[in-house]
Amino acid sequence: MARILVTGGAGFIGSALVRHLIAETAHEVLNVDALTYAGNLSSLASVRDSNRYRFVRADICDAEAIGRLMTEFRPGIVMHLAAESHVDRSIDGPAAFIQTNLVGTFTMLSAALEHWRGLAGHEKQAFRFHHISTDEVFGALGDKGYFTEDTPYDPRSPYSASKAGSDHLVSAWHHTYGLPVLITNCSNNYGPYHFPEKLIPLMIIKCLSGEALPVYGRGANVRDWLYVDDHVRALAAVFERGTPGESYMVGGNSERTNLAVVETICDTLDRIRPRADGRSYRDQISFVADRPGHDFRYAIDASKLRDRLGWTPRETFETGIDKTIRWYLDHESWWRPILSGAYAGERLGLKAAG
Image (cartoon, rainbow, N blue to C red; front, side):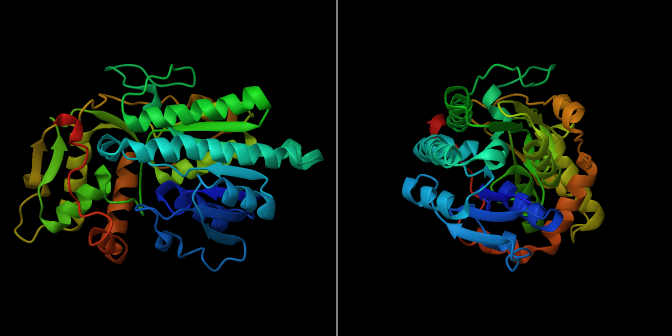
């Protein structure tokens, strides 16, 4: 059993990780989250009463608070997920991304290094700082090829630039100070408890509300889709068996164009929740101006993770999207309050177009 400090554990991927750690392992978890707009403690209702789970509201940029939590909790593993994570929001307001993703990561590394230096013996040898990142740091692919652990960095948006910078900081703390770090870069996640500004939950909710389904450009941009529960299983494999100083790509082997994703959502809802007027949800699709600097294609080669650590995704895109849609149909009480508060489904990321 390990003591695991998770930053951003009230967010989408972070809450899935916390639920997995409490339900499927014997680890003790300290969840540190600032509860900004996308943080939602209701995503953690199933683990709230566990005696192995504790939540503390704190900002990762607050060095005093983070240092105090390191001293009090004495984690054996730090899993750093806290981040600003939406490209469109980064176009409208990049400052928050620089502060959280760069300054926040620096603060976490500084606290982790001081904590690690104070450990001894097996505790020091077993300590890991696991930084969770994105494939967007590598820029865009053409029609062929895949991102690998050796792909050069080429970020194209304020979001991906801030995440690329945080990756480099983590790597530098390993090479300069010897901190035992791990880095994972994942493809696009989806699944239950996903904040509804992101493509899949936004399209599901707009379908159900009878609204237009805005598809950027002609919907030709390609992403590799990864079911969130598959992702957190990969994260566990990496912190348990990964080699310090190395990075691992995590992908779902599910490339789809954005238009194909929206059409799959429509077709699934046509089957399990038909429109009252008998028409297809596809009739709601509407093409809108593309995102500024929209990367054409992302795709991941996760063979290192498969061959060295034995991880493969369990969900296909079809099985994962079916589970996701059914979850949103059954949990309106989770997403409906969000639409009346933090986010109302409006278009983001247009400031650069002016």
